[in-house]
Image 1 (cartoon, each protein chain N blue to C red):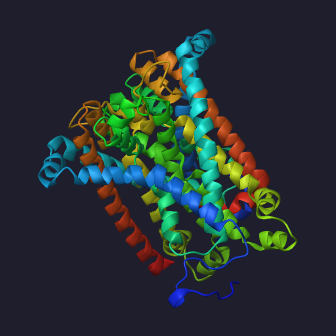
Image 2 (cartoon, helix red, strand yellow; image 1 turned 90 degrees about the vertical axis):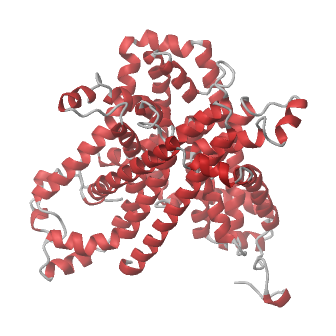
Image 3 (cartoon, rainbow over the protein chains, first blue to last red; image 1 turned 60 degrees about the vertical axis):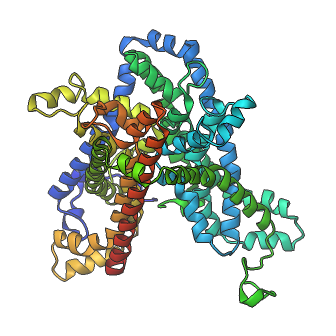
Length: 294
Length: 284
């Protein structure tokens, strides 16, 4: 990480003779393969989003973004993330606190269960709520008679988003807090701090960057989720349409410039996420290091 | 660490600790987990069990379902395999070589994690459409990507790439250079050192990366449906078929297909886990 010596590969003479490096030709081949692959699969799709969005000029982009349907989609996306992310944050801290600071039976099983949403298709994540609250379910008729709308309404979208973003914070915090152990907390407690004081003034400062890292990833997924939300949303314009769903609607209406305008906004969000993530890794790498490589 | 406390027959649920809040934290964790994940998922299991064997079998052997499963799992296998090759090369270049902009390239690898799948879907489609930047180059060669199975593979490569790179990269960083020096001293060529000394050590990480990329690809929906064309029997993936059944209010069909998908992915991950522990025993 600290190695910042920037040497163009063609300038390295020493490396040619090094026994732990490839021959220059092999280096060139590997680098060319890697860069071509990344350019075709990552860079080009990103450029095409902005190119398509601005293909009819910035005014058209502005027109799409200022449209009431788009604004309501942006608002809904922010609202859903504002509910789902804090809930998963509290859960992540609670789960990491119990798993990292204590020894109990069934801990490995609990950790596996927390990871479960990552191995379930987003479509199935939405489907389980349709089965739970839909017309054919046990709860469905009761909800209907009481006028409670969950499916094809905001609560369903929030629930599906919580499901798919469930493990993010917990996964970052568990290895980090396991590595930190309980020494700091024991010291604070022995000096007379209460449990909550210990948590606020000792544990939280210790895990803040790891927590922020998890929240960042959780938020990116919450705002960008498509499959699960698509199943429970009902696609009602202006009411249950999130930004990614709005992209689909505009695209299917052959309004490519409009779809790519909203997509460009989401891509901008992704780029901001990546920049913040990289900054966090560079500045506080050690504080979140335990969570890397998992 | 812990002092022995009275416990029945030597069994105790948790070890005693001076740190407070165990009951509250674990209680909240279990309640939230049960409400959000376990009850909805067991609802799926319960509903598919309620279908009855003959109905379940009829849905499972429906040619359209079988076709979509073959496509989903086949395309995911190919995409994960491509990602293993190029993801390992990308990780190697990032770990071993120093070049200007390495940090930016490193950060870019996570783009598929951060970019919403619907955005990736329409971007790849416009790139590979017959008039797209890459599509119009490939069309004269007779290669059709968008609205063809190849397009599905492309989308799945996109979303799976960071899984392989981020699993293999930390293990590569840990490699002890002395091992390579020893191999070189003993007369191994660079190629021999990589293929017979380094690769076996990387095998468990590569298998894990493959498994993660594969698992993600099988369930992927957002990025695929735009580029696939979604023709039944040709380019219809299983998650899309679930959505179609739901839109037809055919809850039984959607439930059964979802259950089949979960069982197959679970089984394949089990096999990969066994493979992984075998490679760890053999090479780890």
